[in-house]
Amino acid sequence: MHCRTAAGLSLIVFLWTPFARAGWPASEEGSASLESLGVTLNRCGIEANLETIPQIAQQLRDMEPLSEPGLEANRHYLLGLADVLQSMLQNGSPDMRDPIGTQQRVLAATRHFAQCRTLNPDEGRAYAGGVLCNWFRFMLGPEDMMALVNETQELLNEARERAPDQCFVRLMALQMGISGPNAAQLFDSLERDVFVIIEDLRTKRDTSEQPPEFWDVFTYGMAARGFLFLPSPRADLAADLADEVLGWEPDFLMANDFLVPFGQSRQPMDPSEFANREWVSLADDPRGDGAMEGLPDATGLQYSPDAADLWIRIPLATPPPTRAFGLNLVLASEDPDNSTAWWGGNSGLRFHRLITAWVSLDPDDVYRGAVGIADHHDAFGGAMTMEADDNVGFAADPTSPAFIVRVPWSDLEEDHLRLIAAVGTNAMWNDNAPNGEAVEITRPLSGK
Image 1: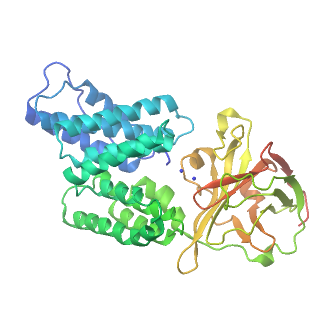
Image 2 (image 1 turned 45 degrees about the horizontal axis):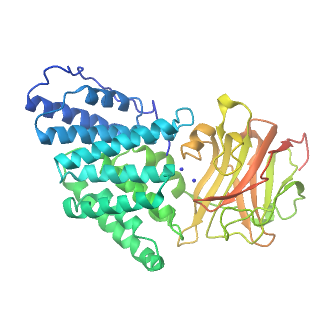
Image 3 (image 1 turned 90 degrees about the vertical axis):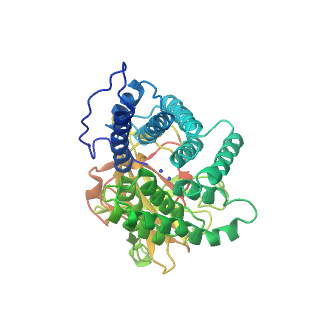
């Protein structure tokens, strides 16, 4: 349900004499300058370093247009990459979100990548950049979805002819092709086709003397992410790819904060742990009010008083899916300086902490996924398990039917809570309980 900003996490030492707008140096020096900026920007993309990217972008804008088409193409490519990276990272931070500015910057990146392709039609990275911009525009919610899909398909078709070996473009083409009446059969071949791309990246990794490129590392991450969001998720494959890419590039933040937690094995609670608990109703929730039919639909919110642990039960309209499911406890806050708007419906609710259990069964019937607690900053950016990941208990009870959550009060660091619950799959929110105001719970002084 999300990409985290890491401003300040991995500050790169960035030393460069400011470019003079008058009298840009000879092409050899210009090439070396662009190469140095490109190396630094490449690292910023891998490490999600938001602090340095705007500095690079400004220096690229301060440069006079270069007379040599290849160099000018590279300048536009780097400008596009800086703009789209900055947009993605800022959009992943609740304190830095600027929807209008983000849209404008992504459109500017789109134009820079297009200008690069005009000057150098065989520059594969510019096709990758254009596809990434369109993917991000899709995530932001475009006014004309079909126009964007058609635009992306045309770009992919052009890339097949001009840059057939660009791995990120190949991956996005695969993922876009999984639709329509033949989707089930296409899913069957997806694993094989993705690993053809991964094998090409392995060959490049093992034979190249150059540092890893952003696009190569990012393709690993997006391939792993794709396996998490299949109808039958393969968190085991995502975990394998995350381990592999971290062996290649240990500072890849997307893998460290997002992919690794989703690949960890998780043991649900045994039914005996909650079978005899007494439940108090806190709120009812209408049946059939979920965003999508067939996904978990909450019908209420209950809790069992306990001085040691917070026990929450979320009754469901139908038995929960046991292959892949997701649930959250959303701890509400009225402090605008220490909270973020909840993204799953109920847009008036703000939260300061989030308890998460998003899991799926792998082929060996082992649950893997993100289970833990995060503050609103980390949760908004997709890092859902920054705290207490071993202490949150979860279960899907098909007999009642319901989801059950247990969290030690000591991990919550507060004795009075306002909260709602949210249910869905391991990748998609579907329903809140309740839909309106958060319910209040106070820790009992004693009892179990």
